[in-house]
Length: 226
Image: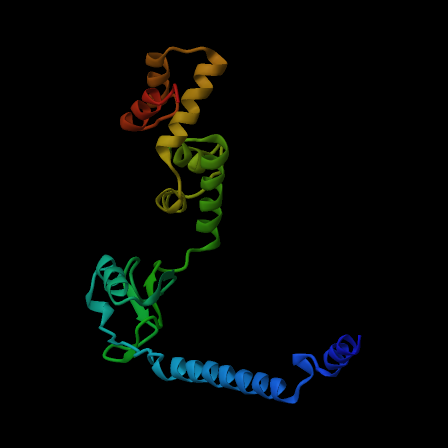
């Protein structure tokens, strides 16, 4: 009986491992060791990280006044420039001619720099010319008329009564897809008047009809089913 009590007393006197001071000392030492190892890895990573400083490529701008417009655009693309080709009115430079460049020739700039090259639209048209152009655009967009048909309507004494030079300016500068206009007219004749392809073609090219060019009329007839 005494030996049993003695054993119990000894068990009570033994402290758990985590309550002993030297246990926590070991834990602290291990934690510090792992922390320092992690720090070394980070510092090594920073030290070994390659330096990738970008070097800016320089481009020497050329004299675009001596180059064709297509060649100017190719030069800008080849040299990776942020470029714009713009058109503006000029009293001194003929239509399509070179006017200016935003960066002077022989100037060195960084690749990717902005560059604007300006070309002439010719002299600024008069109000009469601009009005004729607006009318021409309206006839093309809304009524799908031919080039000759629009000119005739612009100059007719029963139509717009513009002078011939204003009407010609309008025809030369209106943005229109004449093939598409012919096709729209052909579809109207087919759906509303049930005309044959041959009759539609004749009506499209007739001097008393739509006055489209033969190639435009043929395009329309060939694409009626689309």
